[in-house]
Length: 298
Image (cartoon, rainbow, N blue to C red; front, side, top):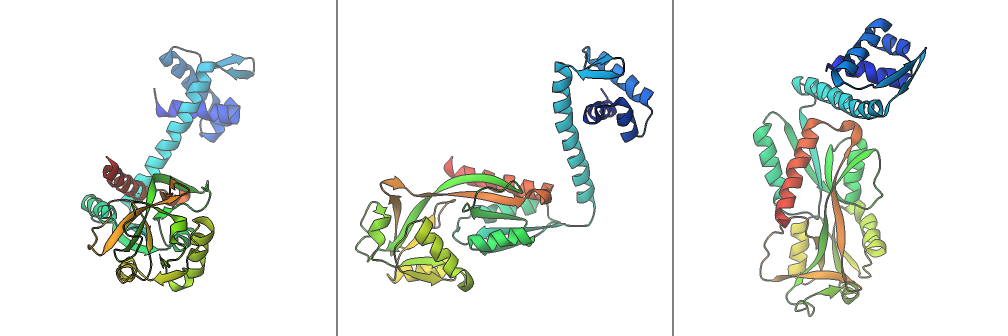
């Protein structure tokens, strides 16, 4: 079976015409007819029932059409991506990750990817959910490790990674630090520490208050390191998510599972990228990082 025969067959169905299929493929109508006859002889089944100047696709032909359509699309993508990878253009990968993530899996994935593709220039930046979202929209970020706060868009690949369990970090000097679990309502008298840039503080506070349900006052830190120093000083509590392996803490900070109405609080984390920017490097890095995170739960 030749690829060309498959292309002719798909063109006939798409155009609903042998003549227009021939014009689309820059060959004669007789060449198309002969190719389909040879294809049917090779398969041993009828794909098209001809009657005078019209035709009807058979059940076998319908199945063959759907599979060929998908296969030819994949072949086009392979061809275009191979050409792109063989050129000197766009040999870069811009990665964004949410500033609440602090596990080693991202750096491990970058190291593994760079070992296989040393010629790819990688840049990495962290940010709030909104900063990463706008980075994807503007094209400054190729793919982002982010939490889901919006409905999935058909314009993006939304690769679901895990429902990360929410945890509260607080000073061992806090009167709540001996609790085995905490309800969000238990934290109303303590300040909630949010990791956020200055221009995103209002947006982050609204999300923590209106969506997650925290009624506390808010304090802000520019980084997780700064936030944990504030926790150590018993200035408030820090909500985090167990996206991957959590870093070890000093004995002065306790981690306690967070619940809402006796149900564990979780947040969905995904890898996002624009469908129109889908390429081999993005897909390969996504595969590596997903594999790293899956090993945490294994």
